[in-house]
Length: 444
Image (cartoon, rainbow, N blue to C red; front, side, top):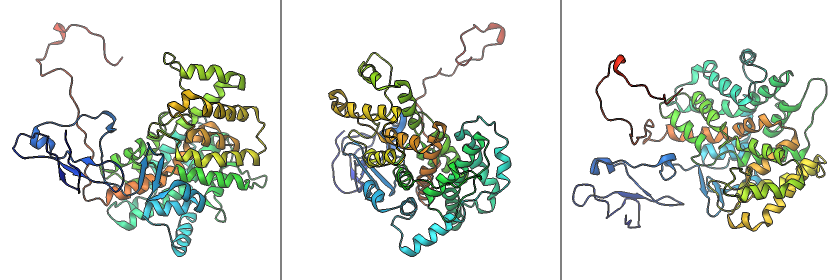
């Protein structure tokens, strides 16, 4: 296929569509690769495209986030991720993702107030928690509780009303840390900790996670800074699986609570948000420093199915820019909690050092990724393993909400309805039950 570069709607000369002179337009982005607009392909050629996983297919126009995996670039609305972590808190970034610009002082004050005074959940939601088993995974609990929010705020479910969309968006951002912390407390059998209106977003999340009524809790400043950084770097990441899930569900005009509950379910998968749990599980398997050479040998052996979690990334082919940001916070938190000599964390840091000096890892660009450092930070702060992915869901809620809002306002929005390459039986005649030949069922 020969593509002529140029302005948007440049024509493609070499695709024959059955009618002389017909071709496909090329759409030019602000950054990144141009895309061939295939919407007219079937009409002209009678054919569809085939792209399992949609890894080569654009599904929308978006102005929110840009990722360049080859160069290690992550931009939110044009701002590099390290710049935002250095100068902003999570609610600055939330406003940016939702509105396209960083807030003014007045806008920030109003936004913080709005989020702060929506952090409590309806008391009847406490009853919903009691319907779950105590040992339920908190992600399962969050899926149910977030989906149930539409039953509590059904008066604001007109998705084409801008005020309703704003109210739902602010509620979700405000209440997600509360719901996640409640899932944690419920599993422990501890009383729920109500949010504090005098605390920052990250500080308040830590308070709800770890405070108890019988004693005062004040998180170390290093923990607040590190969690704020984690929340920012996890806030959005272009058209990942959970964001596409939110867009897909939302394309049917489902309410935002249902769409984001679906996003939580998608994030739960071990190939997505569950990967940060996998990092700690891998480190637990290694156990001690003296086992690192053995584990690295297994990771390099192409005949061994073992996978070393926490290194490499599907998108980034260089050092993950989010990992670069979190690395410095990782060491700051270890010092604040006096954990530099903790055997487990010492082993993790030694694994990082060896991998960064190993030719095999360097040649294949298998650098420590964001999950490696976020996992160590969260463990040091005190997050139990099952709460790693719920914390990710808290961070990603604003990204999901931004994409949902963008999609609803997009005049090109259509219900998601991909095609398939059918490989089943052609049309055949019905066989009476007594004449059928037995076969092994596809599903037992």
